[in-house]
Image (tube, rainbow, N blue to C red; front, side, top):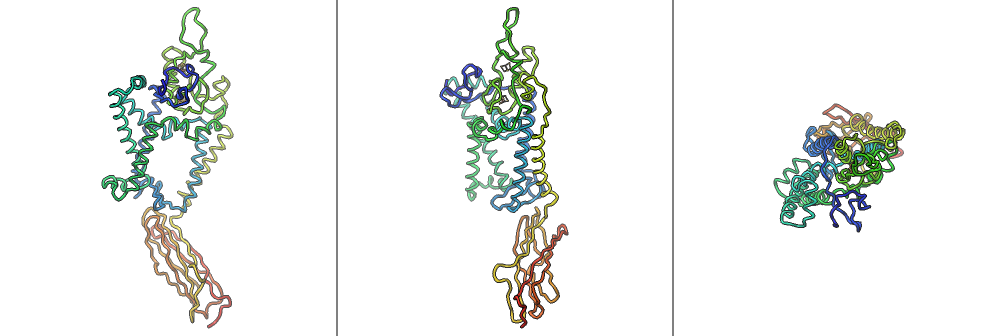
Length: 473
Ligand code: SF4
Ligand code: SF4
């Protein structure tokens, strides 16, 4: 029946379980599975969901641990403040994450997809449990679909979709909290969308995207959209730890047959359980496939069957391709894996050093004002400068500014003390004058900016200029 998955394995139809005869999508109803990996995945999902949801609400000082105020171009991360000039750090951070993912993939295949990707975590940790709770286990859901649109099915469908919408709404608001901060978001929720139409619109669009993805699109995101899945085959090699089926041990597969005259069979009893629990609808016995998200559900399913028929577990297991071929497993840490790890560590170290050790808590520059380089008065020469100051603390801080020149120079700093809020910046004028009689050529000025909260100072230099010949009045 089009739109319904066959309960038999892929071998029965000769095509993937997620495609119908015309190449259309078949909605997968993965069966429930219990086992050691499922247990650990649930623990990991719970920890990740709690952490992810708590992040915008955890405060580090006065600001949330993560607050990305794109509108004001102010970013607060782990108790540090960043502005648009710090975007270069993102290049290193993204490179670190990218090589971290490459490192993990070369080491253990798509372990990220099955264990930590938000797509899997939210789908398997929140949305599927809601489906199971409302509509029952896979065989009941399948029967429900096969029975057509009965009144009961419509009622369950509407209830399920309403809950999906509520969860999507919560997740969308949680997502927005990263950008507008949790207290601002709470006030927006309390006071309604009036006056915040754009934010409300974004919240609704994100809700719609979450709902469409987790209620309908689901495994297609991993199978069709996600570029990482396309890369995995070039990132893993014969020594990478992957989930696979032991062909030597399992074949020839066949229904359990005992007694004298029973044909010789491998350990695979062709029960199809590993296929029916697979959330992307593939048959792991067909070898490594791009659609496999490394969730390990087929391992638990097969172990369960092996225990039932009294055979050793591990027919489907984590192993290297060399291991599956019965060869001695080589070292997991190979040269290229170590190289990926080192690049990842170097990129993250560069970010860490810049954020936690080398970072200056304020930026200051003394620049000549735009326009003419000096002003000739009847008895004096005047230079105009501008002090650019940015506070990179997460709190308001007061700065002390002083400028000195050689004897005879007169300095006017209209704001010798400046108080700036977090990531606030200012451009303040500095005027320096010298008698024309005392001017004998360009000379250096020294400006000092002192951060009164830490006592840290910064010395700045600028050149005083006058007419080339040093004219006397
Ligand atoms: S083949 Fe196994 S590990 Fe891969 S997605 Fe299916 S159930 Fe998960
Ligand atoms: S669960 Fe194990 S025994 Fe059953 S079909 Fe899959 S590999 Fe064979």
